[in-house]
Image (cartoon, rainbow, N blue to C red; front, side, top):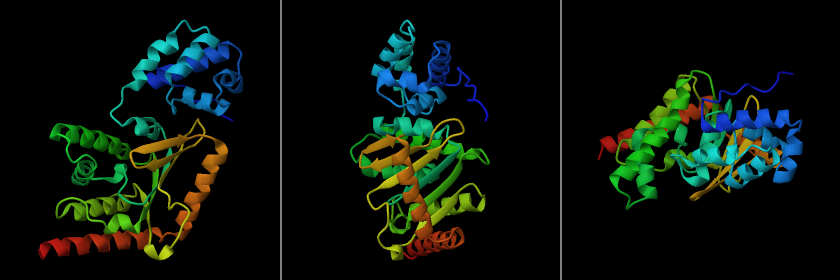
Length: 280
């Protein structure tokens, strides 16, 4: 079995902390479970800190400095992790997303951020913050489009998305915005850069009616589940909970249209939207 991936400490503040944490833990002769105990976290959580898939909190940094006799190293450097372009409830998930080898996502209401066009993203953010200045909206749109740069890699991460049919039917933005947005999704499918399925209204009740779900898998760390809510989110790493949501996603896939039929529906709705606006 291969050992843990060697982190590049210059890659990011989290990579720096992760590499140093692993070095100091191993030098102290502690297992991940041993180090997790005084922090009241699991050994898998320590592994995720070391792999850079979880964000170290200030109180955890202070305890690690104490347990590992690190002379304040973790406390000093942990402050850099607070800088993020994303809302607090999503920042950690967005950072983990960049390290994921596989991302599986169910979206009940809108096209996921990684698949959004600029016009669609702008319309969504304006709906979220109707009184915000244009500069604020511009910054949010730029951050969202930067996230989508993950897809410039031809193969990693593997992105598999299940869209509720409501995502296709809800008009977002000015005339033409939805046509362009759906065509963009179809283009990514044609380029084999994303697997997209549609969960039709005819599927009825299903396992994820409570909200959005994102599952992330990594090459050297346990998987994570992210639950999306209205202005809130929860990142979960407990193995039983993650397995529960993995099953929920598998059931969604089983209820969804095939990728081929889903693409046909996406293209059909895009064409209908285009014709509708041409007739106005």
